Image 1 (cartoon, rainbow, N blue to C red):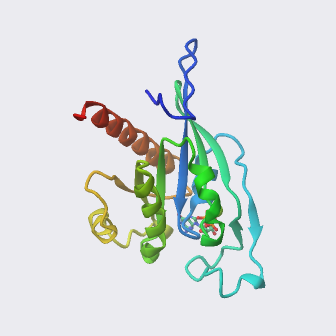
Image 2: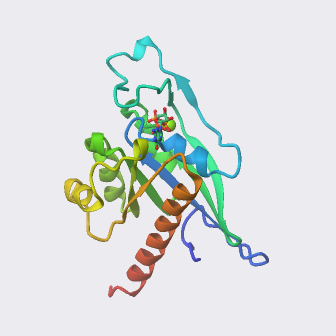
Length: 202
Ligand SMILES: Nc1nc2c(ncn2[C@@H]2O[C@H](COP(=O)(O)OP(=O)(O)OP(=O)(O)O)[C@@H](O)[C@H]2O)c(=O)[nH]1
Ligand SMILES: [Mg+2]
């Protein structure tokens, strides 16, 4: 694995362990904190705040009725993909009023996961615009709430009008194997992008 050039990549010569930073982004309540929690091998650092009546009319949790808290700064977790690759995960806050932190959170990241709930697809537009604008590789992860995938990957790709090379995968944010596969897909995609950029004529 070669993530040279990334601020977060560390490659000690002795153990040849590479570490890289990944951002988990998306709209409000799509399962970002859940993903970091399910896949992290350390107890994740979370910054959840209870949603109070003050948020009525601001926090729209109709599609996630059991949700009582929201991320106000970030989630942090870590996963070893194999013996020589450690990923550090930074989950973003989903609510737009906390988005001023995104620029800090993405600094040095090699790529991002944009989580989507297909019942609220438009909620992820801003995240996609953000990564497109910064030319940071990302993939789209459909979180299959209640095991249901309401739209297939091609329909989601068409609705989001994203490039054909951006991977669209589905997952269950609560399931470790599922979320680990999302991260592996992202790493593979980042490597493919880097290789193709390396051989592209100037
Ligand atoms: N049924 C089901 N519930 C889920 C799934 N993923 C998340 N949830 C629930 O959906 C709610 C929202 O999950 P969070 O992980 O807090 O979402 P988030 O994207 O971090 O939310 P914000 O940080 O507030 O934007 C929680 O109540 C989760 O338990 C899923 O795959 N299936
Ligand atoms: Mg969260």
